[in-house]
Amino acid sequence: MIEVAEGVLVATSRAMSTTSTVLCGAGEALLIDPAWRPDELDALADELEARGLRVVGGFATHAHHDHLLWHPRFGAPPRWASTTTAVLARDERATLVAQLGGDFPPALVDLMGRVEGTDAAIPGSSVPHGFAPELVVHDGHAPGHTAVWLPEQRVLIAGDMLSDIELPLPFYPDDLPSYLAALDLLEPYVAQAAVVIPGHGTPGSDPGARLTADRRYLAAVMAGHVPDDPRLANPGMREEYEHLRRMVVPTQSNSAAVSRG
Ligand SMILES: [Zn+2]
Image (tube, rainbow, N blue to C red; front, side, top):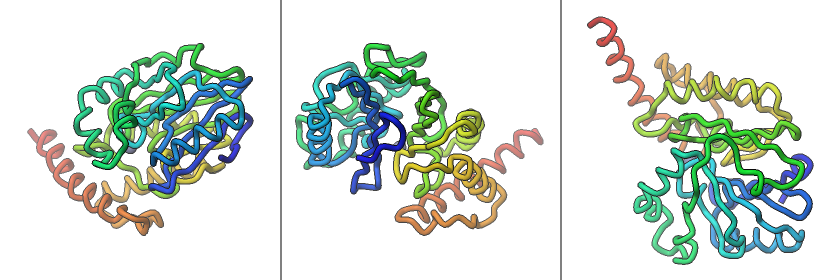
């Protein structure tokens, strides 16, 4: 794990550079999106143990299978998410479980997605000393997607947005307006942040540049231009671009038809 700010530790999975964030203070820890492979979750438990940390809570940024994970060795403290995320984790459980793959250990499958909804704040008993996390709930990458802002540490835990390796991925069926609104909502936090932690990729001291890059990419797709974005070369990203491009064109003609009508 690397420490990106005082008491803010980040581990990175070998699968899709998925990040796990640990907030720790006074022997307590809050786990945000612990991920991903069973051996990595086990290794995370080892690290927590070695540091003498007791897990007092969990938080999931959104209802995708790789952000809802848990391990028995983390214990059974309350695990939180936005109310929309909690509803989706319950209602979409069969799909999410299938996405884990057939060889995922049953004990971990059972623990996936067992989150309770809160939109106001993470209850204090789940927050280690020295932190006052604020939840920024929006529908950018997924309905009820949540960024966690740590004002004192000036750290923005962005969930699956503001990544240096992934392009913006609006959720099915490609709700671009929600994504653009989410970027607007994140902007004041980005402006204050010293560090951004993306759900996949590298923590960085360049949150403003990432926001600009995401807007630039989406603007190009919406204008029908081929985006000039180095992230297009990353695995799977060309397909994501093609998918978004196909979705954007009909959306534009639909809205033109509506405004004409
Ligand atoms: Zn996601």
